[in-house]
Image (cartoon, rainbow, N blue to C red; front, side, top):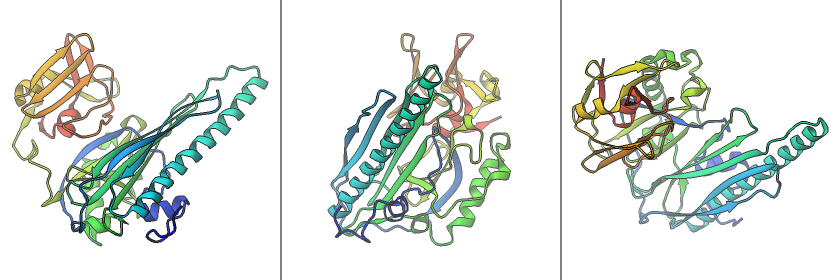
Length: 362
């Protein structure tokens, strides 16, 4: 580790969180289910000077040395930051954390295998997966901010308890972490908490309203396409099927482009085939929705995938896969996978409201 970096980064979890802007809560979160919040918030961050053209990522792959653990680990390594000392230590921290996770899981898997053997029980290898996503390379809005997400998900055969760590850094000659107060001002918390709670109250059956305590000092968040995404841990304010609730806000004066909400697009559910699945999730026929909204829909029977396109905007959904994206956003779970029902493809209504960002009329 080099010593001439800002504030002398250490490898402790708290140190990494403070310097790099990583979520330090260490709580398991996964499968983000997006909720589009109505508020538009002001961004106080100024463009870094000078600003790099944008960072790039390579990766280091780690493998397990034991037959008791199956590992799929890809660790991001950044290049192109203005502060190369900070960059080197950031890369070291991310690699070190992944190596420690791998060592801990290998130890636990070996111990569990030994116990199973002694009890003459079958043992199935544990699994550990680490993936990453560069949300902002420093060339987006607000300018000069790097935003990175790393998902660590381990499984012992039952329900997995993944963890999401986010890193938000100002790419400058002396790099520094970015906080919510940096983005929104010192008085951000009350308004942000109220806006999030208001969104939860619109769908009270999906959330644990009594468990919502507001955003924390080390709140998990990232920046993508001019939007602030505030993420909560799985099970913290919603049932497990919701995944990790995510509330998105367009940064005032920093919008990445006109949304379908702003364009006045609306979907009238009374004019589309709908139903509720066993979990109570409201589903809508995708073709009916596409016709109303002016989207072109193409069906691939071999892959059971539907392509949805409107001009330069494109996305696709696949039967049985609860992973939805739109434009260049990262895939998110919405609590229900697309299904075929009476020769029609149905998707959650939240795909229309949250991903396509279209107002839904009931």
